[in-house]
Length: 554
Image (cartoon, rainbow, N blue to C red; front, top):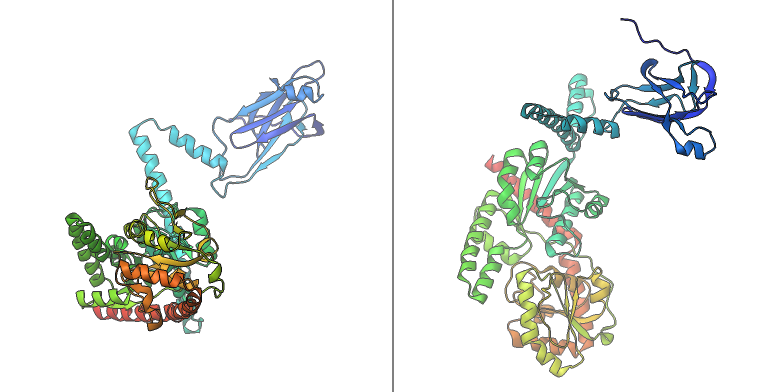
């Protein structure tokens, strides 16, 4: 078959311009010959004829620019897009004499990524499927490509490729090849990514992640409920040197455990919901890993207290079910982490076979407070979607606040925190703050006292510790003080009943100097008990204990 004739190149330049050249479309304009006859053009791809076209389409923009005739344009849609894996040199010449158009040639490099043309091509192929078999074939092909990409990504991110390359070199060169220490890896699984100031669980898990890094682990997070989390939340963690696994590389937690099978040394499961769903999967896909179940707090104890207070038998039944789940998870895990000594003691009795460790979390202590005389108000801080906090706020306003305002009419009670139901009405003297961005500046720098009037709950209360760290006395119920083991000088802050709570608040509120004295002791207590050093040491001990249990079981 005779090859199409190629117009030889001519040194002269054809007036006009090659505006656009892609794998699917070529657009431009060429000035007509004398007498108005439109130019006939030859379009070449890598020196071979691609198409012949007449430049006679309307181009009013060219006429307005003063280049004469308006019918001088051309717009070629290429029926079969040019191959994306090849480099293309597009040239446009006048057929009569070979004069090349301004802007020609245009070079289209071979696609090395999923560029716009390649996306368009894949989309066209997918949309062109007419039958069930065609759609099935396309889906199978795309699924296979996607799986290979995801596997390659997981192998790179988990370090498998680097380890295999190193092992090949070690086998080739023998003992003389320098040994390379393997970086330990820890995976933390929670319902959501930790967010500063949101809840005690976020503070605790962030602190433990920092401790794991201090112990030499490469630490990564996955949010079980949100595989496409907010980019700003991911960015904050990544700035701290932590990795966040998320879509599109992983669709769920099991994806990570499976695709990075056998590469984690520690799997840290935060809260009972996570432990119930993923403990067995962690065992299956990460058989050599030490599995830690972090209690956060024993949910069944909180639910049991709420059921007794509200006289709800259905909640009592649910608390028994959750208790069974928590005890089972503690028995199955290599180690259990709790923050409260009371919960450590309860778990040790309930599950004697479990390895329980009490691990605090680090709380940064602020600069000392010196202006209690200038402060006038008191505050309760918490998230009101949490049942104990909403109950505490309503009970305090109804039972305690009227007597406080009878003594100090100017006193205002601040309700600080998100998710307070909008339909609730509050009496005079209550200020609803809602969520505040900067708890220190907007609240803890301005109130004389905080209160934690919880009537049921479990575990250590994060907002109580934040108040302590800021040097602001917090008057609380025994429930709110659980797990703190306050020294004798601070024990009076925890009261047994509503009368004791009211009297303690009145005495402290009336004595700014005593507030000042207690403030220093509170900060000293937090510095000693909730430091980065004590947290890291306790977590290290918990890991060693859990690892010993796993090795014995193996």
